[in-house]
Image 1 (tube, rainbow, N blue to C red):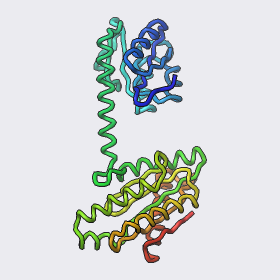
Image 2 (cartoon, rainbow, N blue to C red):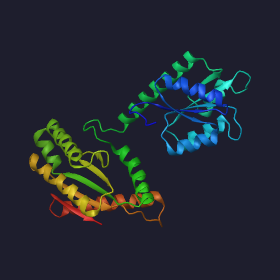
Image 3 (tube, rainbow, N blue to C red):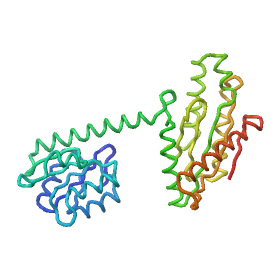
Image 4 (spheres, one colour):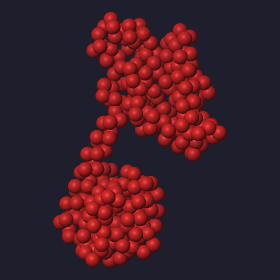
Length: 298
């Protein structure tokens, strides 16, 4: 069954087939998209292939029990929450389960109204936490991604590009003469330049593919996955021309564009720093070459 947009995916894990089917029917009737697994190993296989919002797992199962599964999920599937279910005769306490990383605990046999309430609360809190997390990664002024998000996304994108063997380009963009413009016209006008550039970045890049960031002050960055040097150059030239068309006084853009080719001989952090440094140097080369231009380093 194809998952509908915005419908939470819940994975039921229980070695008792009758219990598994009963709970899955109940969960499905509440409007969630339901998956099932007969044990911890099977559950991990599902998690490897399918994004799951919430796991509802029995605690006592052969092979890998619920607590072992919980540990694996906490370490390797950080975007997935877990509720543990236990029989009345089992020794695991609420405190022990929560301390291990579950978000809630429910006794078996499972009461329908209690399960409905716990799932609703878990999904509601999950949505709220995701919204707060998204806000923490967003630049307050321009509403594009911020420096924190850039640092995290850069590492992920470099590793993904290397693993899947596709090109990745990084552009560092600096607004020329911004301080003078800001001093002459005031901070509100200066903010309009920053907001305008952020809008241009979103308009000139590929939706749901490229990533746009404000690094701070008048410095921005764009990550271009699956873009060749020629394609990356075309995109940033379009950004440059679009900015000039807005005529923000004497402001222009200096852009450094580099290919993010991973150096396997270097530790990951050192390699990523080297790529960012090359992009910064390309941007400063553009600035020292008279500004209002793009310098590309393949």
